[in-house]
Amino acid sequence: MTTEMRTIGHWIDGKPHARPSERHGEVFDPATGAVQARVAMATPAVVDEAVASAKAAFATWGSASLAKRTKVLFAFRELAEKHKGELARLLTLEHGKVTADALGEVQRGLEVIEFACGIAHLIKGEYSENVSTDVDVWSIRQPLGVVAGITPFNFPAMVPMWMYPIAIACGNTFVLKPSERDPSAANFCAELLRDAGLPPGVLNVVHGDKVAVDRLLEHPDVQAVSFVGSTPIAKYIYETGTAHGKRVQALGGAKNHMVVLPDADMELAADAAVSAGYGSAGERCMAISVVVAVGGAADALIPRMQERIAKLKVGNGLEPSSEMGPLITKQHLAKVSGYVDAGCAAGARLVSDGRTLKVPGHEHGFFLGPCLFDNVEPHMSIYQDEIFGPVLSVVRVDSYEDAMKLVNAGPYANGVALFTNDGGAARKFQHEVEVGMVGINVPIPVPMAYYSFGGWKASLFGDQHMYGMEGVRFYTRNKVFTGRWPDPRHRGVNLGFPQNH
Ligand code: NAD
Image: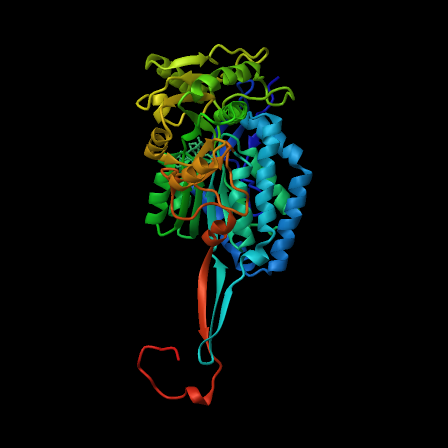
């Protein structure tokens, strides 16, 4: 007997999309390697349907009261909190990350929803009385209309939550195109939003690939695009979206350094490097992938890291004992293992080799154990490329200045961390480093929702970071008024440029 494969479909106009899809992709269970579902892949016509629904919904949602919008967001926050266990389970099933990590992802997304619940305060305008005699000036921020979000596989719940809660709180309507590799979280959240009272069409989800993305980028009714993903695609999204007259923020890839000065607490630094290097199997844009060990720091650090690596439990993310899960696909596993081979061939010293790892009962899962390289040189591909897997490189440098030169020469500039007990060195570092998000004795400095998230250089195309006040600015535009009430004293023709007096 054959059982039919489950299909994950689009969510358009407040309900599952009824028409069968012409194209499908496969969704794997990364822990077993089995295909667990198929996902609909949107055609341009399906994208058009979603945009039309969002455009129609904007006619009322764009003018809905702040009280109404806040109420929906607050109800969504309560539902997301209540169902966070189910959401986290979906993340583990399709992404592979372990349960504790999945719950952490949901928590960080929830914080953005909570921030968006404060929209009434965040969106307040400005008012200046008597800029000239009896003349007042005031400004408001209005929503853009239909906006789109295109998101990566590695945070299927949190990264979309960086976008749509703020966008819809500001009065926009939204079309989300999540990663086709782990699509279920987006539909789950769309259902929660419906249950929270969000009107149909305010949030639509279309699944798919480049075909769907390209239609969103060129669609005349899409006003703005938020993107998070790899650097080549981020650049493409930015260039194509702006060429079509859209506002675009496109966050790209990363290669994050952790600089360890010789005076650092080496136990703390080893804990941090291992946690930030191998958490989520290294599939985080804020993962540490290079430890820059200054002076003798490497000799103190590496044995401590090896000790911790040896104890890490790699396995199915659903098992409570697992600390690290599999990679997302077989192809990605092959790519990451290929980097480990290339590092060995280039002469780096592989001090922990995860390639031999076997997870009993999961022989076809996409697992790779933690890999640690010492004596990595900047010309090696393991140093230069974003590997996005559990591969950590240690580069030895002589001085703080050499470390700073190395970090600032990198093409990516998403996150960086410094480990030291020297406040003066930390202060100098935070001033000199050319990176968007900086941790001082904190390895993964992801800003809270009321700050904004974004890197510099090839980690961000566009000028507004995501969420926080930059998110509110991205999803709104400013309108400025100048007014006075008619008064006989104002009569008389004057062709001169208005002057204030
Ligand atoms: P990706 O760039 O392959 O895909 C991201 C999105 O773009 C997906 O929705 C995908 O369907 C779409 N896409 C892929 N190829 C496309 C193409 N040719 N044309 C149009 N659209 C396309 O990224 P990924 O593998 O899903 O995610 C991992 C990457 O995301 C890493 O590089 C990671 O650093 C980055 N990332 C960055 C941040 C950040 O905040 N800077 C956060 C998370 C992930």
